[in-house]
Amino acid sequence: MSTELRIELVPPHHPLPWRLLLMADPSRTAIKKYIDRSLLYLAFEYDMPIGALALLPQDETQAEIVNLAVDPDRQGQGVGQALIRTAIADARTRGIREIHVATGNSSLEALALYQKTGFRLARIEPDYFPAQYPEPIYEHGIWCRDRVWLVNHIDEPDQPIKPTGSGRISPVSDNPGF
Ligand SMILES: CC(C)(COP(=O)(O)OP(=O)(O)OC[C@H]1O[C@@H](n2cnc3c(N)ncnc32)[C@H](O)[C@@H]1OP(=O)(O)O)[C@@H](O)C(=O)NCCC(=O)NCCS
Image 1 (cartoon, rainbow, N blue to C red):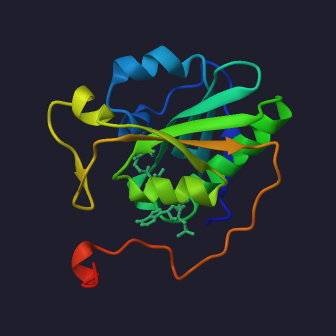
Image 2 (cartoon, rainbow, N blue to C red):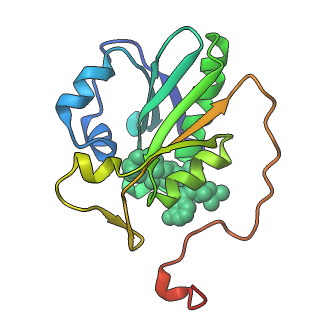
Image 3 (tube, protein in one colour):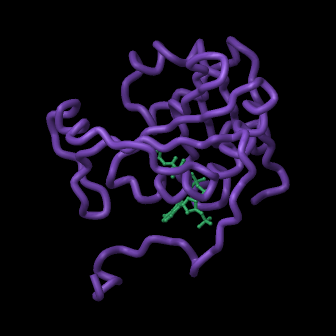
């Protein structure tokens, strides 16, 4: 990761990085409903926002990651992971004990990222996405159907995560065993 990278919790009314927020949530209307109530962490490189994480407190002890995005040019370089770790550390100081996040069954990178930062699979909502979006969504050749919820009990000590290989996902064609 670049030494020029810094992550900050920005004050309310800081200009919103719409380009980033819309990458994770294509609905401007939906973003407007939660963004003013969220803690917004931005990753800056030379004062340019290149990553964003919005954490929405649900009550005194629980919060939800409602938006997470990294500039396509800077993906795969640890920025997403750094945003999550910063948000977790800050949330802890605010008395938050659980952070929840939802993603799709086909979002393999996000599922890897969250589990590497201490989240565990909690529950699924079967057929959530077909009910929300008229056009079917595919990622990695997988139909995105189910909404998967993960939870991170941030008051518990981190479990060591053992790396196996690079952790990168190869296209299906590179995996003839599958
Ligand atoms: C999801 C997203 C925020 C990840 O940010 P990122 O900065 O690229 O993530 P990191 O570089 O910190 O990667 C952390 C982990 O995620 C996983 N990951 C990221 N890119 C991956 C890829 N192409 N293949 C497999 N795993 C990947 C890896 O496990 C990686 O850990 P590693 O570095 O030990 O291999 C980013 O890809 C993004 O903005 N996507 C579009 C917006 C979006 O879909 N947001 C919703 C997220 S639910």
